[in-house]
Amino acid sequence: MQIHVVQPGQSLYGIAQAYRTTAQAIAQANELRNPNQLVVGQALVIPIYGSFYWVQPGDSLYRIAQRFGLEVNTLAQINRLNVNAPLAIGIQLYIPPRPKTEIEALAFLEPRGDEISALLLQQAMDASRNLTYLSLFSLEAKRDGSLRTPPSNGIENIVETTGAAVMLVVTNLEAGQFSGELMRDILQSIAVQELMLENIISYAEQLGGVKAVMFDLEHIPGDQKTAYNQFLQRAVERLHEVNLVVCVALAPKTRADQPGEWFVAHDYKAVGQIVDFVMLMTYEWGYSAGPPLPVSPIKEVERVLNYAVTEMPPNKIIMGQNLYGYDWTLPFVPGGAYARAVSPQAAIQLAVRYNASIQYDTTAQAPFIEYVDDEGKEHIVWFEDARSIQAKFLLLKEFKLRGIGYWKLGLSFPQNWLLLEEYFTIKKV
Image 1 (cartoon, one colour):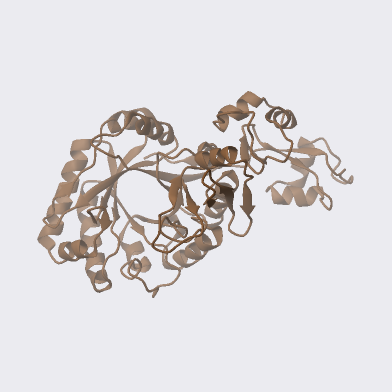
Image 2: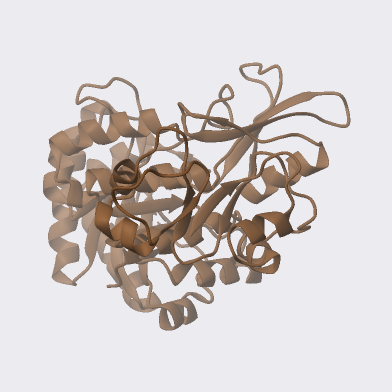
């Protein structure tokens, strides 16, 4: 696979010729609605085996080999070059595919309404071929230990067809919001906790294909931290008895004593010792009610990972990743209209519609678009593309993490799935 960023004046046909493939193959891989409407700055994934590199001023064969993790003699042999001869600027070198790393991958499936729509089921089916867990969001915990369960139509077929396992996601959502008081009530009653665990097991047996349970319990009061850890210990012991893996979603912290209502009860060290693995929610720096920012700027993600690996082994860590961006109307007014969530594909269509180029922030490793709508209002859209997701994949490899977790299915981002398959072998359980 190769990532190509569209330059002014380029056509899909010309790009295809440069990479010795066809325009049709590129259009199909990137799900281009109109192959004749490329956007300057658009990152395309070129579906070829391996990749190409054009020699730049100052390059040497040794430096290029080092950059791509190859032996210099191997690179020279593949490209029929004399290892001691100078390189001509502009020549095309073929780079063979790099070895894949085995990881786990999960993605959240959040049904809306009384059943999972046919479109969402198809997207879940397609994604699950490259997923360890399809994470059903969510089983909402109640104060009496009962659960409000989501629609699950079609899940059994996905499991049988793709080999992905089901992960049940248990939350403390109440009226659409994470409730600290709900958690306080649950954590104060062992009887309620035990009933809730029995209800989780019963639902898992009823649904079938369930191999894991994630506790996504947020906004927990700080004075309930010890009680929360004790609950997790109780949950692990009971769920392990029926061969269910236990995972916990954690807020993105950068230090143990980080203040804030979303952070204080999430003890990385204690939770990391109790559960099988965790998913760090390394996204939402840019969020719908906040000022325009990249959703998961790489430096912030890296800061969280740097701290996390001091508290738990890397092979217990799933890195969270957004499959969406936000479209903010400017100027941003605190308390004003929320930004609109958009898929990466929808962001590109906005660029097409408003004749905007796609820019790239190299510090955040994130693309963005600036445009003026039909009413004359200015907008900025921060989203994800092939370059930004590649940067996260390289970070995942660098830290030797357990894997990646996507929030959430239903927003089109074909380049992610192409590159996921290129970089990793996905473990099935």
